[in-house]
Length: 480
Image (cartoon, rainbow, N blue to C red; front, side, top):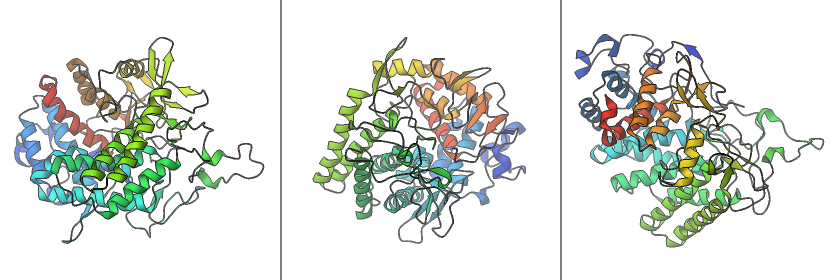
């Protein structure tokens, strides 16, 4: 039930997709590089958006990354979202920014937030970049108000989705209608991060507040305390009938309400096995508290702020009571999914974020948390069925299948590590597995990185830029 187009290629680079395989001109310091480190960015005139602050950051990082290959990869990856994936319009009124994932011409609430996240620290000094980020927030508010259960949207509402045969409610402008908790968390994270980084409140108008009302109402609906909720889904138009052995299959696997939020799909866009997806509920708890702060301080609505905080507290209480399980060798760990009926899965995936591994990155727990550390050791071991060891080591997931490691997982392992040697290991692996393209991919084979999926995956490129910048601040010795 995979929804993204996958490309398992041997030796096909992102440059072939972005620049049609032609030799790119060199700019600035690129001109003194060895030929194998020639820029893979589109020519200047073909870039979708240009930010002086981002270019200055690239110049600054040249002096901080001793390894020339890592420096080259950073310069290709960090600006990739701006170079290739944004459609920004600003005619003097409200800015509007549509952000595609890369090789899929649709805007995921999750991906678009993560793709522009590394640029937030620069927005205060770059008005043009600030306007682009405002446009992302405004566009996301419109998307949520169109359909809070949808995960991905079209730029043109007259465009036809390829998923119109799904048994669900498909509105014009919706690309895919998969209910995932994190789809509503990410716009809150972006909004809060933008506000704290810039102090700007322009995007947080009445429409944004209405979108936040919709988030709270949707989360409440999917706690399913009073029935199945308002969302249903089956692929290929398989509408359940009277002879269906599972008449409620469009509503997902059975659950016993306990205060947690149901999620029919994971951040990978794959279906959940048990609908209480623990990392996404942690993310919701954090996001609701961020929302509450903004409703109070920006929108001056303490009543709505209290409602968001009350829901966050209810989720936290349910997580404390239900989210942990006893592993036979690892002790108390966080479950990945559960149903409130006694069933759970003790695993984790690297197929996008949130994951259990990413909890400190999202602000859901401290890295030193004992349960998190036990979970982390489980995730990065053979106790996790999606942990793969070969020539290279890492975590994947069912979205791409056996033996395919996700660079996002390696980056998240490094971003949540307090060990310089672990961070250096992650960077060494990423450097060895980009298959001479200079870009990150969705996944690569554990023994042969020339076999990889998605040559143009903007989120992974942005996250690599964020990882390198954070490493330069925390463990500069790991950069060469």
